[in-house]
Image 1: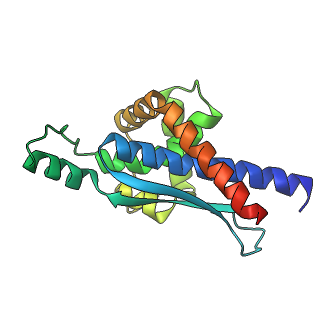
Image 2: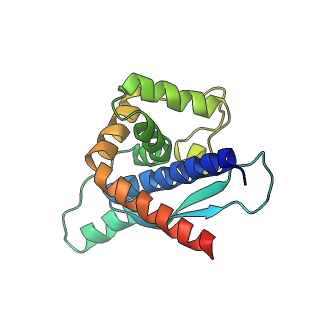
Length: 174
């Protein structure tokens, strides 16, 4: 692997780790649980990303809320758009990583561009309730709320992402 290829792979690992950590932190914010994972792409195809990632939900926030209420434990009301926020969290975590001081309009523009240019996974599109990338809506309110939650929990995002990067490096060394 050339130096340039290694730099690209390193950046892709970082982005994948922060992306999946973003999903995880939003999911946990709303009371759910799950696992963020990243793995090296072993296809050898230079046109593909060097690293892939996935957030694997274990318990849905709605289920956790229902259980809490049945047990008499107070539980926060889930916003109707919690899935949309969790869906855009990965992409916005990447944006925050690259543009920490960006404003909501810049983040929304970046998100919209990535969606309409086909860079967003099917699972993220599904969570964001986007069926047609050429005819979609990204609201400033949803982006702003997601960015606010991510910024409030940024230390947890960083810790999760750094854990994923370290784990991936260990796995790759084997």
